[in-house]
Length: 494
Ligand code: ZN
Image (cartoon, rainbow, N blue to C red):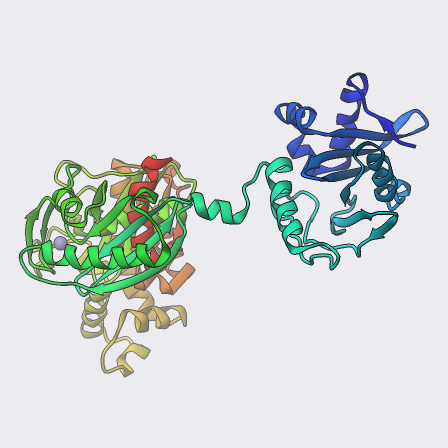
């Protein structure tokens, strides 16, 4: 019944495998052929009318055989091949357990996995397991949902592990965890320091906060951070060697040498924060970035800007933060303010002063407070009816809610705000011309309505052929800081 596939017939089976099984197709590419040939214990085929109609690839794993069954025609399925193969291999090996994976033809059929085992003269077939396996998926999601009752737990675990190692070249989850490297992402804010233990893949494993210790010397705050990092490492049994470094975000201009040029919120002057942190915390390297730029890096690496070669981000919150990411790295500039779009002069004739001490900055119109200021002005200067007039104090959210509901005056105000945002993004385009523009911050809760308004205003301001820029809403929310800080380390680790 079974025919051993020889060197001569080896090439004949690949078209068959590729046609029968897209998952195999992924694995049986040229470089994989060698692997299959080298690792495979046996390849058997069943011929019908001179052609291979079904192929069985067997890998020897410990005392067992793992078999993949590739059938090209329905009638060669469920043919009791598992049992027949078991007999065949038993002749050679004396004992065997066979795991047979049958490969479905249609998309919805789940892969079926059967266990066969020989105990003396007794032949057992265990109930089919139904792992959630769909055509076109790689083999990684293969999950062993139920352990057949007659198989010992230890045997079963070892078997699973070896299947991943030998057949799929994947490491088991435990092994993955053992070899896992981490970094810390730290986002220093005016009230709290947000800290995350971040795995190599950029996912946050755990996060917590410590209160921001204020004062002119950052050492106290860094000591608090050190104590909490050590507690985390002790609890999770993570050694120094498993920590790739610390990424840090701080609310002030940062230059490429790791110097923070003043941090008014906390009380710091110029400080060489990356070096000081390495010294106090005792983990290196420490890499530092401005908080808005670091959040942009987070979105570029793991969020709304993922896959883009270049990205501009605007964070519309209490202020307007900004950042430019080019080829996976923050554009820092020579004084640490590159990307600081919130303080781009948008109205040189403005008389009121921005938080930065200058006048006419984008932040004066496009931050939450700037939007409220604009709303109050419009309400004062115009006589139009508006739902906003019924409110004692208008917030940015009220403004956007009213605009979405079709309130005419609210739409005039949001248009005024977005015209300025559009102009600023157009100005930025003439300098850095990024592929993607990401809008984040509390105000972006207004969603696509806000995004479309900004995009329309941008399009009205920029050269026609520059209008195909991708606009997206930020995706990482409050995690952008921690994940971006981690990216400062992980981008080098790759
Ligand atoms: Zn300003």
